[in-house]
Structure formats: structure tokens, C-alpha cells
Amino acid sequence: MYTQKIQNLIVSSLKKKYPNINIQLLSKDGLLVQKSPDSIDSDYGSSIALRLAKFEKTSPMDIADVLCKYLTDTKPDFIDEIKIINPGYLNFSLNKKHISSNIKTLALNFDNLNNLFTKKNTKIQIEFVSANPTGPLHVGHIRGAVYGSALSKILNYYGFNVKNEYYVNDAGNQIKEFGISILNQMSNIKLKSKINSNEDSYKGSYISDLAHSIQNEIENHEIDEDKIIDNVTKIGVQKMLGIIKNDLNDLNVNFDRWFHETQLFSDKTLDEVLKLLSDKKLILKKDGATWFLSKKLGDERDNVLIKKDLSHTYFFSDIANHYNKFCIRKFDKVINIWGADHQGHIKRTKLAMESLGVKSENLEIKISQMVTIKKGSENVKISKRSGEYVTLNEIVSEVGSDACRYFFLSRTPDSQLTFDIELAKSQNASNPIYYIQYAHARLTKLIENAKKLNININGSSEIHLESDKEISIAKKIIEFPEIIEQIAKELEPHHITRYCLELASEFHSYYQSEKIIDESEIKKTVSKILLSKAILNTIKKCLDLMMISSPKNM
Image 1 (cartoon, rainbow, N blue to C red):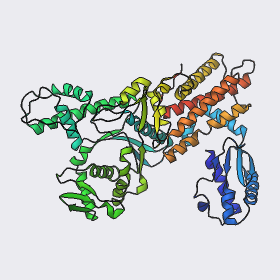
Image 2: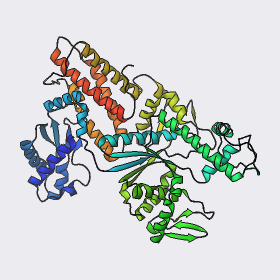
Image 3: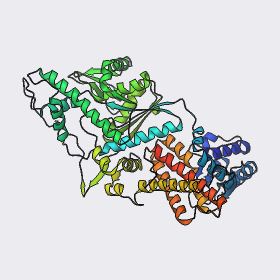
Image 4: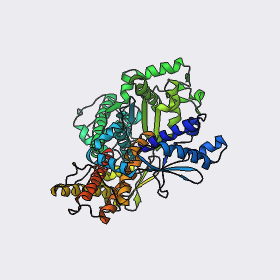
């Protein structure tokens, strides 16, 4: 990965020419090396001379001159040229032969990239979606599902040991209300006392469907009210989870584990956490409730863990859930992807885990903002209880999993997103995922045609990239490992959507402007096919990491 390689060269030059400088202090504002913008005629750049000038009380241009001379004298083969640009930037250009050699490797042995991403001893858990099993997943859940699954896939590829988890909230008042909502629509059940509906009841046709499905599984006679509520609720949750799992499967999202909140009760994790917090004098019983004294730790207020009626708050379960992840199952890092309505819970959750000995930086919480979706000219309100919302199943059925995954992954989860259904369904260059998949299909056909003409790319000793377009594409291809590393460090998989689209766009332009297969110019054709194969391999890997299909024909 060239950014790191060039950074290592700069660090070596600093140690040689400025041995007394604190390199960590110089790099505290970010990397010493960045990819050059398109307007600059180089591949990588560094502002190290400008940073160092503040400490050396010397002109940045003079420092750049010293470093440039040393780096030029000691540069490795992959560097072609190092230049200085006013007011003191160092710019590095890669050697074209070195680039060409890399392209041949990526064309014939793309899996060798795996050697760059060494296995790491970090055990990571990513929890995402985790919607209450009280209704079908809605369009807002697509965002967290796509983000979490793609991030997991990329972090695994980078070398981490990653596990996906869906936390099932199957305890508490909302679950009981869900069961009552179903029960009230079951015509064959006669209770000793009437259960009144209230404004918290869940509505929508899915409640009626569940009631119809469940009523034949419940005995048709008078029965203890508490028992019937419990039975209907358990069956309703089980059936709802089945629907949720099927919907997520259609979006190509799967989990290593479905962890149930009720387990925290059955294995006494809640009791264990309460005792630990009590031993730290962070528990107070007041007004009939049990409080976590989070204000002591810097929170704005204390928080109730156990209510007057002895029911547990969601916050108490959250603490126990995270305690289970870190202290029982021993994950090194936990990444939670929460909906925007949970943003206010981040601080208190981190404070609670710190009080239990978990470092704050080991718990990463990402917020997934709501999605605006146009159905005709209307924005449909998302609300489980009103029963009026656009479901995940509806969207995936209408536009397909691939389009959903690409569009919902294309922006950071904390930014606003408007999902354009008509654009996602279109089959032309204006639709980015269609454009990318068309590039894959076109490249596949190109390679097949070369094989039919017996053009052998495996026996070529060298690859010759001549045109500016070819060099530009080759440089884009070798950025791939750095894109993966950037995603792994920032936890932002949207970078791969942009990168893949840019690569596909450069290929389409190249395909339109140059004759790739020319039987009268076999040597040039072999080089072009090798480049095309490297593009194909890279696009295919990008699509695989986004969990999007790679069609061979379109």
C-alpha cells in the first residue's frame, strides 16, 4: 500500500536529516502522506516540510529541498520522481513499469492481495438492525442492515475476526403489548376478563395476519388470562422473527447469532451487573425504583434501571448486553449500529461500560439516520403502531437487493439519504449500480472473446501500458488495497461504492475510445486484456464485498 510505503520513506528521511524532531508530534494532525488531487501532476503528496518548518524556524522550501534530495538518492524502484511544489509540498510519482507489473499480478493472481491483509488477533462484534420483533422491518432498517453487513464483510477481508449479531428485544412492556394487540384480533379466544386496547396497541394488516395464523395453535376455551397472553406473545414473536429473517435474507443479510434479551434474565447477567455497580457505589434505591448514578460519572442525570413495578428498563438490559459481549464473550471491540432515535443513549451507555472496566474506545456506536423515500409524490411515514409504513420487503421486491444495497451504502449512515425508487429501477448509465454491473458483464464478454481467439495472457513476460487512459486506470486499480484499509480504519464502507463507480466509469470510457482486441497487434492486445482482467477482478471483488451480484450478461 503506497501511502504507508511513502510515509515510511519520509519517516526514515526525517530520522536521518532531522534526528531530534518528534515525529509523533508532526503526525498528530493526520497522515504524513495523502493521495494527490486530480489537479496535481503526481500520485501522492506530503506537507511534511510545512509542518516541520514550524519547529525548525526554517523556510518550508528549504526543508523540502533537503528531504527531496535525500529521498531522490535513496528512492526505491516503485518511485519514479519526487518534485517540490511551492510553498514546500513534496510530490511523488509512481514508476510506470512498477505499476504495469502490479497490474499483471492483479490480472493473473488477484487473490495474492490477501497477503497484504494479515490476520489480526482482534475479535470484533458488530450488532445491527436489532429491531423489536413487533412488526416487519421498514425501509429505515435497510440502511443499518446494508451498512452493518458490508462493514463486517470488509473487516473480515482486512483480517479481523468479525461476528454479526442481532439483539432480539423479546422482554418488556412493548412485547407484551404486541401480544395483546394480536390477541384482541383472535376471534376464537374467550377470556375471563376483556383485555382493552389502548393507544399503544400495534396496528396494521400484519397483526390480523398473525392473529389468524396463531389462533389455530391456541386451545379454544376459557383459559387463564396471563397464560394466554404469554403464549400468544411467544408465538407472535417467533413468527415475527421468522418474517424478519426471511426479509433480511432477501437483502443478502445474515447473522452469526440472534441473541435474545430474555437470556440476560435466565443466565442472571442482570443480577451480576447490578451487584458490580452496587459494589462501586453507583446504585441507589429511591422513590421505589433502582437508579444508576450516572451523574457521578459525568452524565446529565441519573438513570432508572428497575422501575417501581419491578420491571427492567431498556437501559438496564443494554448495560447487561454489553457486559455480556465484553466481559463474558470477550470481544475486543464492539460496533453498534443504532437508529437516530437512540443517539441520546450513547453517552450513558459508554459511561456504564467504563464503570465496568471497558475502555470507551472499544465500544463504537454508529448512528443510522432516517431515510426519505418517495412513492409517487408522497413521503410515507414510518410507524409500526399506525401500520402505515414502507416495508423492507416492499422495497427489495420492487427494486431488487443489488440496487438497495448499493444506494443505501453509498452515503455515510449519519447523513441524510433520499432513496429514489425510479433511479434504482432504471437500466441505464444514470443508475450507478447498473453502470458498474454493466462494466462487469462487458469485461467478462471481452475476456471470453480473447479466449476464443486464443489470445494467451498467461504466458506474457511483460505488460506494456502506453496510453494515458491505461496508466490512469492502472493507478485506480492499485488504489484498491488503500480503499480497504481506509474503510477498516474509518468504519465507513461507502468509500467502496465511490471507488467502484469511478473504476467502472474509467473502463467504459477506455472501451469506447480504444480498440482492445486487435489480432494484428497481439503484443498490445495481450497488455490490454491483462489490464481488462485486472479491472474485472477488482470490480468483482468490490461487488463481492458489497454483497452485490456480478452478472456475466446484461
